[in-house]
Each structure stands twice: as structure tokens, then as C-alpha cells.
Image 1: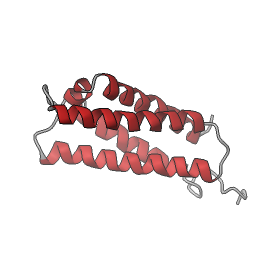
Image 2 (image 1 turned 120 degrees about the vertical axis):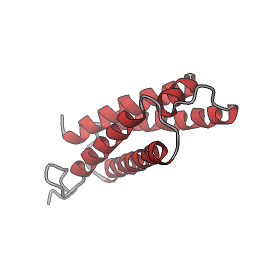
Image 3 (image 1 turned 90 degrees about the vertical axis):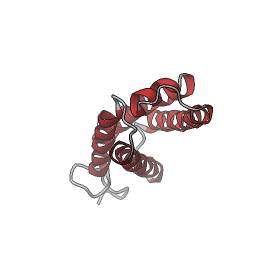
Length: 136
């Protein structure tokens, strides 16, 4: 299994699981990440919508994990990389600039930063990354 396939597998499991939890019981991940025990109904709705998006990312990574290199896998890789960078930044901001901090906040920041770093390593032209479609 390649580094990219492993990245997509880990992303499928982590984001798919988080997405499923946000759809099914949004108050639990909100409490774990942000320390909010009774989120507003509007926050629960947005958490469910976010969960649906994370579930979609997870499914896309699961389905695309073994695809051969090309525009589709590059798009998936770059999309996951953008998500991980932004998720890490937003969670970091929540932890530093606000009072939002649950028990899972800092581990989530670390996981997203690690996944982002892994994604950078998997980019074409990087040492250990994928070759270009022409094999150069």
C-alpha cells in the first residue's frame, strides 16, 4: 500500500467516523471539541450539515484510495490537503482566541496538522510522493 493509499484510508476512517457522529449525535463531538455541553439548535443543525460533508469526504477517500494517479486522485489529494490545513487552522484559532476548548480539541489540531503534512509529502514531485502521470 502506498503512502497516498494509506492517507486516503486514514482520512476515510477518521473523517467518515467524525461525520457519522456529527450527523447522528452532534452534541457529543461538539462537547468533545469545543467543550459546549448544550449547543444551540442552530449549532446542532450546522454540525449535522458539516457531518454530512465529512461523511462525503470519507466516502470519496474510501472509494478513491486505490485509484491510479491522474487528475481525479490529484483533485482528491489536494481537496483533502486544503480541508486538513483549514480544519487545523480553525480549530487552532478556536483554542487560542476563544474559550472553546474541549478534551479533543488539541488532539484534533495535531491530527489535522499531521494529515496535512502527510498530504504534502504525497504531492507529485515531492520526495516519496507520487510520480507525474507521464512518469517523470
